[in-house]
Image (cartoon, rainbow, N blue to C red; front, side, top):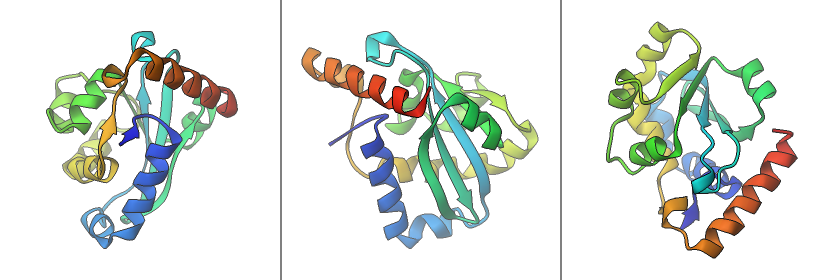
Length: 162
């Protein structure tokens, strides 16, 4: 099990993405730099917004990493934001990204809506790439685990100058 919103999560997701030709083929029509904002929720140990980037070029995963706000704004073609609870529902496949986006529970902060709608049919493949193993979300952690998680995210945000 890997904790959600940690470097380990993105590293393992990138590693598994690159080990399988499935994702490159499934996303071969996609070239985009997407930033995903997970909004702060202190009850979940997330004391400040966290942003991670998925950079795909014709299905090839160029980068999957955390960014600070300034760096994300400079490179992003699209920035999408939602609460950690909304992202959890999407990553657990309880809800679909396209539905949550159209209902406004995932907001688009930057980029062309028309261009984003052209790549949303591929969203499920990206969700699959980020969930190839069991994820542990903060609401599933013990109090001690949650405090460690909060400290780890605070350290990560400091490292990113976020």
